[in-house]
Image (cartoon, rainbow, N blue to C red):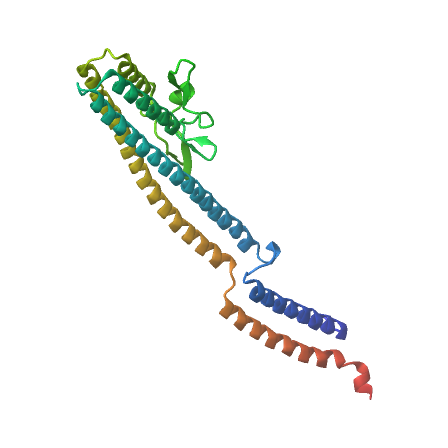
Length: 298
C-alpha cells in the first residue's frame, strides 16, 4: 500500500487529538474524583454503578424504615409504661376504697378519680406517632378507642380484626412493630373499670366486692407487662437489624466507590505519562508535517 504525505499527516493529527482527549479525561477524573463523567466512556463501569447505587438506595430506605420502627416501638413502650402507672394508681385507690373505714362520700370521690384515670387510659390507647395511631393495628389512620354517648368505651373492630402493623426492614423481610390491640386497652379493661366506678358510686358495695377488683386489675397489669416484654424483644431485633444495615451500607458504599471513584495517585501517574506521550507526539508531528517535496527541491 502506498503511503502518502497526507496519510501520515492525518494519522499523526489523529494520534495527537486522541492523546489530548486522554489528557482531558485524566484531568476530569482528578477534578471530579470519578473514573467517568458519561456512560459512553466506560459502559461496564456505568452499568455496574447503577446496580451498586440501587443497592445503596435500598439499604438507605430500609434504614429509614428501621428509624421509624424504632420511634414507633419507643412511643409504644412509653405509652404502656404510663398505662402501667395509671393502672397501678387505680389499684392503690381500689385498695384504699376497700377499707371498711371509708364513707360513701369518700368512695364517690375515689370513683371520680378512677373515672379521670380511665379517661387517661383512653388517651394513651389512642397515642399517635405522626398521623398514625400506634395501637390500631394496620388500621392506623383511625383511633383504637371511642367513647359512646353512654360513657361506654368501644374498640375499633377493624383494628382488632387486623392487629398487625408491619414495615419492610430488609429485602423480603417484614417485621411487625406494634402491640396487638387485642391484648391491651381492651373493651374488657374499660368495662371492668366502669363497673368499679359504678360500685364505688353506688354506696351499697361492701369491702369484699370492691377488693375483688384488685385481682382483676392485676390481670390487666400483667397484660401490659407482657406487652412491654414483647416490645423489648422487638426493639432488640430492630437494633440488630439496624446494625446489620449499617454494615451493608458500608460494604455497598465501598464497592460503589471502588467502581466509580478515581485513584488519585494512579490517575496522576497516568496523566504525567500521557502528557509526555502527547509532547512527543507534537514534536514528531511538527517534523512530519513540515516535510514536503518543496523542502527537497531547495
